[in-house]
Image 1 (cartoon, rainbow, N blue to C red):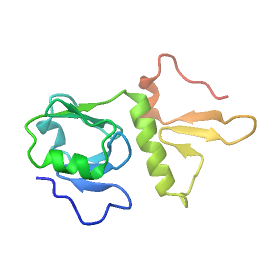
Image 2 (cartoon, rainbow, N blue to C red):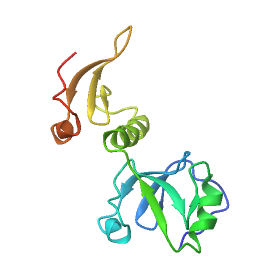
Image 3 (cartoon, one colour):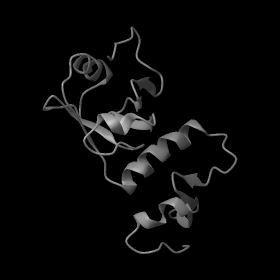
Length: 137
């Protein structure tokens, strides 16, 4: 059961098997190994909470989501493949501002140059997410 805390979380927090980033929509940044046993479709970092008992929670805040989770019967998660991973990666990158290599944004390694960032590399685990193999530049 989800319990509402007195003060809003400053960052992501664990709610059952899901570590949720409280943005709109509420987005998963980490999932316990057994999380997928609880859902009809796979849950991965970047998936977001779409519906609780048929009610859309895409624009709901932390307090409302936690209230609905306390008596829920059915949760519907959504994901959009690579964009979900990039969204989760972007958040994690923000948390690690002192990372060893700040050029990595999720599975993408970028060169932060003007007028726009340039793709330098793609993590090998994510190459299959692209319709064609990304090239440097």
